[in-house]
Amino acid sequence: MNADPVQEIPGGDAFPSITDLGATGPAQQELHRRAWTATRSRFGDSVFVRGVVEISNHCRENCHYCGMRRENRDLKRYRGRLDSLLELLVHRRPGSITDLNLQAGEDPVAVREIAIPLIQTLRRETPLGISVCLGTLSKDLSAELLEAGATTYIIKFESSQEALYRSFEAPGTLAERLSHIRWLAGNGWNVSSGFISGLPGQGIEGLLGDIQAALDLPLIGCSVSPFVPGESTPLRDASSGGFDPTLNAMALLRILRPDWVIPSVSALNIVGADLGYRGGLRAGANLCTINLTPTEMRGDYLLYKRDRFIMDEDRVLSAIAQEGLTVSRKSLAAFLAAQTQDHS
Ligand code: 5AD
Image (cartoon, rainbow, N blue to C red; front, side, top):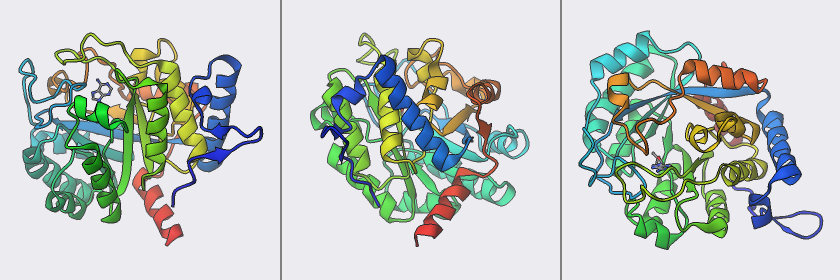
């Protein structure tokens, strides 16, 4: 299922290399052009548009990079209300979205009380494809989410460097996280993963290792998020991840996996000045996300900063239009289901 991550290209250099990852100027333009072409050959001019609702900011984990870590006492904790979320998603969702992602800190209570009943109703009353990003849950709870009707599990491995993973107190051990990803993929889920580019101490070799680690996993997609130092976190004074290496990592993933779903992430707007999010679309992204979290909850969903750049429907649709792209009418879930059938 996985392509061989290391390809030989004319001239004998391994691909991808640190040189590719550090590309700037014309070499970078060429890299992004190749990624763009690979994306268009596989997906045409359309990109998937999903909504995300951040249903709870309670979290039992303690990741140093994340503002929702359990030791952050500056944060007001919330769980969304099932009835108002249902009203929003069944009756008032933007017309452009075909899929919905439910996201939360690692909070099994919110999974049972909000996510599962929400998914059951949405599957009955809407055509939305459903993904979840809810952390490392028990096998039983994961199976209940699948049974309710979610089809994609988003679970980042964050960093492929064991020492970094451990020092930032990311969930469990790196080996456990990777094996959970494999378990999900072997038990009915489409799995999308991701890593953070520019984590303090990562280095460019580390970022290359993250790309290789992603390619070794049984995934349908992968995100690359630039590190943004979080308020009220132990990494608050660290520098942000770079825009260029983040885009280059996305482009390399796209070239090596033309079939993957690669999102453009809103943090690109924080590290990427004017181009921001659109840079992601130029470097091979084919998925955009509209933030639908009700405003009264949004401020406390603190991955990094309170003044994070919110991608509402207008901003997402205008980024897509500015890049000459269109919104897919087919849901990501339907696309993935058709792909699985082709391979069986
Ligand atoms: N910078 C970039 N990404 C972050 N995440 C959490 N904190 C940060 C940060 N400071 C990402 C992690 C996590 C996802 C929900 O958000 O990859 O899995």
